Length: 444
Image (cartoon, rainbow, N blue to C red; front, top):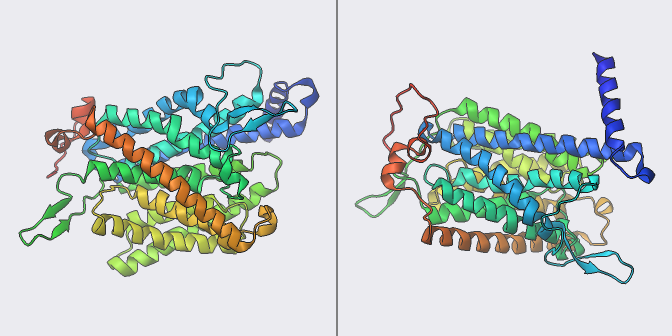
């Protein structure tokens, strides 16, 4: 079996190398190609993880709707990211006197509808980036679950993949103004997770809570009703799939299959996720008097989100601290958004991706090794650059997504009718039951 594996690996490397120009026939190029495609495939598996987490933490009558959204936001997102998003994110604005491409400070303006046959590096980089764009889009699904029109969700997902995500991505990963200031986001705590979290928060805000979630009593006090998910084991499977995919999300963001940083990145990722699960378990156990399963699952994801930005520039000990803080923050954030802001987020997506995305981005400045960052900034300067990135990207994502959701609400409509919500979106939106043959009882 080992010999067969070695022969297969050699064949893959040989085929990969043949895709490069004659003067680029190197083992290093081949390793980069294989590593990025493997990493992108791992990130793609995260779509299944999101689908399982969201399905398990919501009600059975909406399971088909959840998985349909997670499938189609990738399918639509891939097309529009190829057509428009890639150009905004990695396009240039012209050539300098030497004929070299000039990246724009705020937006790319080239490489739209790129339709070439002989650029394997473009294909490699596009495939690796499209799965990140899809992740940002699919984060919103859980926060808007159980009451969003399917067609409205598809409109939203096209816009975030084509415009909202890639433009701010250009600022950081495309050579834009934030990267010039020294802002560091290794794999996307801000670029991917905070952007998806802001859009999720705006979407849930515009939608309003699910029927029966918030009720005003005769004394004027609004009570908050918990609406439990229908399948915790399925949600836990989703967490494991997401964790597994995160080794591609973070590990492959080294962008090199021969980089020694891969090992450190995967170690810090593992430690932060483990610490996040532990701290959320302990903290929720103290708060709620029981070891809460959903909080613990979100704690693991909180650690993963938080370590995504600093994973390449922090020590294992710092990674544990980042994860521990993230696990506590996610519990506090879920309670604050639900009980204080009265914003209904069925799966805690805003808390996991927005709150912990912000924390992880700031952690770069607090814990990051300045010699690895090597951008000339002092500790306070790095913290300032990280804070500026959090605020500017947050303003962009929040304002644009809020405008988008309000426009959708005013035109095609954003929320299903109350009767449709009571019956469930599986039947009313898709005429399909996720659990055919089972009788599902629900008061809301």
